[in-house]
Structure formats: C-alpha cells, structure tokens
Image 1 (cartoon, rainbow, N blue to C red):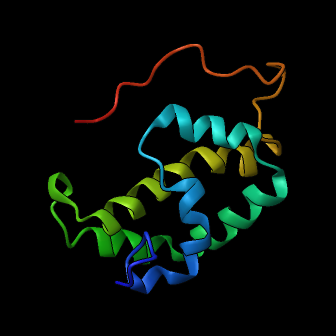
Image 2: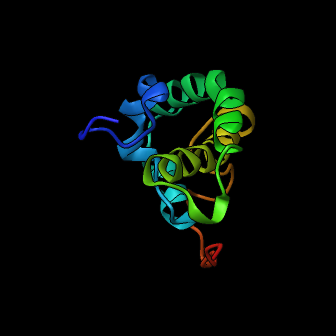
Image 3: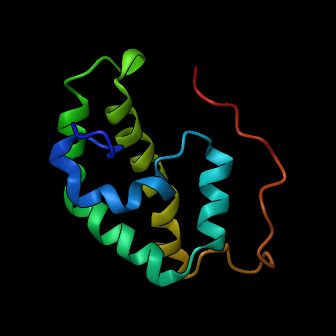
Length: 112
C-alpha cells in the first residue's frame, strides 16, 4: 500500500471517498450524510455498491477484531454506505423526510 492511501491497493478506485466516508463513529457517518448533496451521496453509492461483493470477500480474509488500518477503513466505508443507501434508495434526500433535517438525538455505542 502506498503511504498516501487509506484503503487496500485493490480498492484504489474508492480512495477519493475514503477521507469522507471511512469513519468509525456512527453519529459522524450520519451527520456527514445530512450535510452531503444528493449528487455526492449518489456518486459514493454508485461506486461502492459495484465493489461491495469484492469488499466483503476481501474483508472476510481478516480477523474482524484485528483488522489492519486499510481494511478497517474499508469496513468503515461500507458502514457509511449503509447510512447513505437509505438516502439514495429510500428517502431520495440526505435527511429523513418530515423531520426538518433533525440530527440524531441519541448516541450510538460503538462496537468494541
């Protein structure tokens, strides 16, 4: 892996999305979705969905409790895809409809 990348080399095409979407905190992932444009969400969604099966296969080669940093970043990126997919597939907007764009009033406890 080169020194300026966040993801495993075979996922270099997803690297432009890594600084925004490779985030371990669920609240931050949600907040990033809220402040993103639909164009940005759609671009990330389109790129990541295409590589999803390969990403899962790649991550299955590692112990989830001891992921190297590039693989951990890939995992967090796909956790972000879960949040983004609701905006793209269901809501057709970054916010949840009829909530006035409210942020989450609760804290998600991170997985150990």
